[in-house]
Amino acid sequence: MNVLHMKYASVVAETGSLNAAAKKLYLAPPNLSRSIKELEHEIGITVFDRSAKGMTLTPEGAEFIRYARNVLKQIDDIEMMYRAGVQSKTRFSISVPRASYLSDALARFSKSIGNDPVEIYYKETNPSRAIKNILEADYKLGIIRYSENYDKYFRASLEEKGLAYEPVAEFTYVVVMSKESPLAKKQVIRFSDLSPYIEIAHGDPFVPSLPMELVKKEELPDNIERRILVYERASQFDLLSENHDTFMWMSPLPQKLLERYSLVQKESPDNKKVYKDVLIHQRRTPVELDKAFIKEVRKSSRDYL
Image (tube, rainbow, N blue to C red; front, side, top):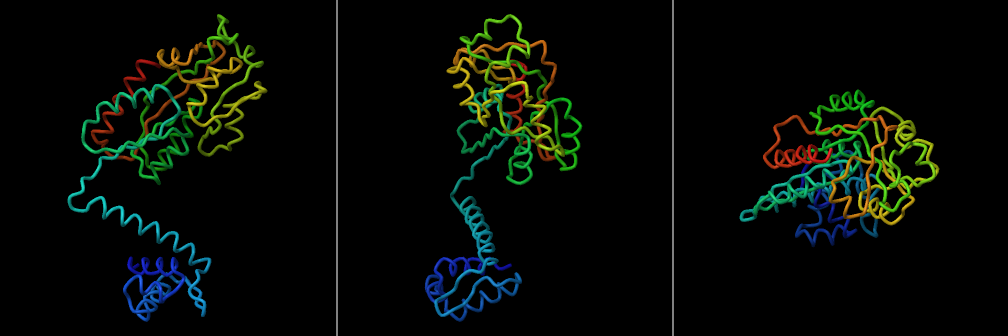
């Protein structure tokens, strides 16, 4: 497909007029008209309806123009990136579960990147999005979290998608609450102790090949009548700190974070479930920046989990 033809079609769609587009592109109107017809013949759809009032997009044409403009933008970005005299930036990207030991690793990693131009993308999300980011959004690394009893589902899914994987941490959740919570005064916390309180939980659990409702039923059991679902970490700490009737199950927190938000974390003898954090990536040798972050993750895992 001729990229120039896509550009021509985009300008015609923008102006709504063949003559106005030809003037903007410094082309003769007959030549522009011929290029649009060649494009339509090549892709097998009618992009524009022609009338005395001008050129209007057909429904198929509107869809085509959206894709064409994305392609043209990417071409412009590539040209800008590699234009003479412009220094390219090193790019590091990773999707992770919402875990404080990982943000601690990110903070230490950020101190070691030096003075060269670099862009770091750090996205907290669920396993489904982490996998999708690697397959479709050009993220280099991901860390996914799942309960040990779902191990075979995730391994099968990762192998089917051709992704490499290796464990970075294994742990049981602790229950976290404010120092002022009545729960903080208990020597031992049982599941039954939690039912009068408000649970804070992440609202997007995921397991490949299993219905969401089935996964939610196990990860968010029915014994709690009041629950606040969140999708990032900042609000969960504010809720725990300010509302003394709240609690949350999570991976163990660094002591400095507990002190910052006046929180307490406790193990529960009723909680037997083991969680795994697993590093995933395309089957390739990680570059130096990837290796540096993975090193910090393993250190944080040893220190806090």
